Length: 156
Image (cartoon, rainbow, N blue to C red; front, side, top):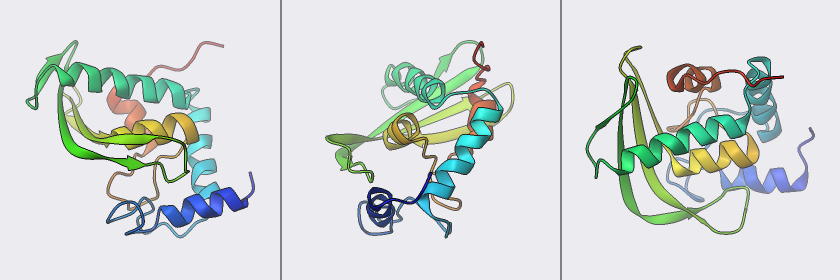
């Protein structure tokens, strides 16, 4: 994929202070297309789709909503907490609509690991295969996400 004008606008929107205080790119100096291509290659190699990742993240968010801001047990060995913050954000890719400001923390109690992500992460992974730039506050390392959430490869 090539860095087209739309991607240049999206990358500008991801800079600190444009949509969020810290932005979406962290210390990553690569073009947005390179960031997306690299992460997409990782999940393709593992035979996982962005939709699978987003669906599992949504599943845990929905389960965690039942906890009303406290950790709740989700079988077989997860604990999940959802924190909602007032307000909504626009997508840096300029998709229509606004995305709620929600933080989800998933603890994999068997692996002794945890992951915190946002509704924006879910949206950007599903719609754009964008896991944020290296060093960003909400960077989702695809391999780590797949391992913690225990995603299985798609059937061919």
